[in-house]
Length: 331
Length: 121
Image (cartoon, rainbow over all chains, first blue to last red; front, side):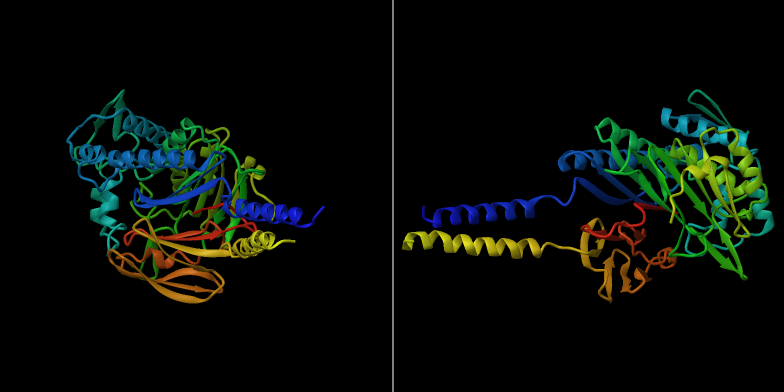
């Protein structure tokens, strides 16, 4: 038998194999980012054909954009802005009611360490503006008038304001709720492995192909270092730190997590990381724990079974809840 | 072997060699990918030092790639929060200038596994 026929077949097979190999997608995972809700929102999804993943991620981003229209404090036409402008509240959407109900529950359980009515206080500090500055004491006192766990009341979808000047600010919880909804949309679309990360507030759905999701926790004082790496599946991971947004004046750092009692940035912690069931709850708890400090903060966690936290105190010492040890991976 | 056989074998041999080159030339390693306003506008290997200005709606955002990774060293945004974000150097790391609509991400086409999938901060 002539040798040229087998050679032709081998060469043809090699060409086809190389072409097939080169045209294979690198993996079945997509990763996309958008600027939404004043932060970077990143969605990773895998385990389905790329086209289905693209459609699911589009739907998840669209859901978050829709919620931004409801919750934003910066959009004058948002539901939250309309509530702030009202004298005594009004009827709210079911979603706004759900977010406010959760926020009020954390506010009550934390003794007011978490507060949904710090809009005026945040405004006078100007941390979102070009030139933030320490306000005078009288302005702080005025901004705190009427706030607290009982400043708002919710009866079904009817929201009441105790004082007309109260400015509602859902910044400490709305982003987390939006992440939870994005995950719900991905689930509805049949996605079983995904991560939605909105500026560090994230939910990890399912797991990576052969292991759980691996999440680095930012070191609060070393920009390019991680404090710990944890492995999770079907959990929310939220970190709040004094290094995220701050300014310095007269040698003092003033950051964006305010103690509702003093009206000044809370001083008990450098960072707090919470691992729990929902990002909205994690968002609110991370703020509450930061304000309460390590000891009182960990006591608050006793009211939330299955929720764990790692707190970096102001002096740099680490304080972890009892169940935290199941999450870190060895370096 | 006839002349007709050569007419088939030579093109097949060339195609096979071209295929090997094509596969070898597939983009590899760790890269910096920058988007402005949602569109990819710059990519570069992470291991080749350089600096670049990326145009955003507020003006140019200055990026530096060096042995520490990639970081933002100049920005026209009002609060300059992006300047304090530090470097990105692991696959999946992300830094951004939200006001200037600039996103900088580290991507990898395989090989070394990143120490984590996402950073909580």
